Amino acid sequence: TVESVSGCVRLGSIYVPYGTHTEYNDGLIHTKETIKQLETLAAASSSGRAVLLEGDTCSRKTSLVVELARLTHNKLVLLSLNQDVETSDLVGQWLPVKKKTTLKLTIIDLFDSIVKDVVLLVIPRFSIKERPTLLIKLKSVYDLKQSLMESSESE
Image 1 (cartoon, rainbow, N blue to C red):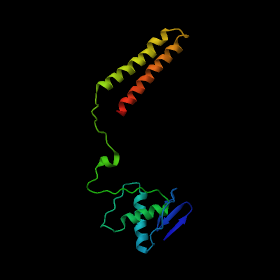
Image 2: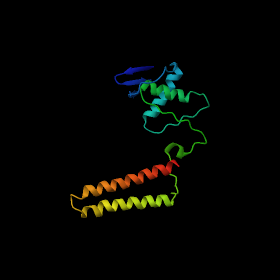
Image 3: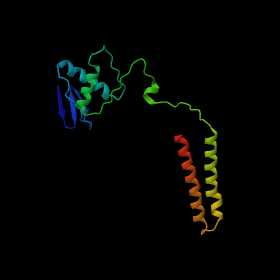
Image 4: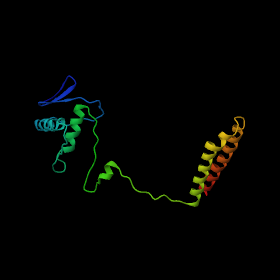
C-alpha cells in the first residue's frame, strides 16, 4: 500500500521522506504490481547508490520513476540518453579558440595599455588642482575611441 505517514510516504515496507516539489500531473494507478515495483525502486534509491533501470521500450521504467518523484514530492530531471550522447553533452566542454589578432585589436590593446599607464603613472605626478582637467581630457579621448570602434563595427 501507499500511504502518507508524518513527513514521509510509505511504499510497502519502505519509508521515503517528502521533498518540497509538488508540480506533477496525475499519477499511475496503484495496482499490486505497481506498488511492488515502486517499493523496490524506493528501496534502491534510498540506498544512496546509483540505480540503473533496464527493460524493454515502454516497460514503465520512466513512469515508475516519475510516480516515485510525485509521491515523495521530489523534483525530477529527465535526460533522454542514447548511443549518440557524449559525456561533453551532459557536462559541457572547453574548446580551444584561436584568438584572431588583427591590427585593429593590437591598436586597441595598445591604446588601453597607454590609458592605464597614464592614469596610474602620469596623472599622480600632477597637482590635485590639475588632475580633474587631465581626467576630463582623457575621458574625451577614450569616448572618441569608443565611438570610432562602434562606427567601424557597423561598417
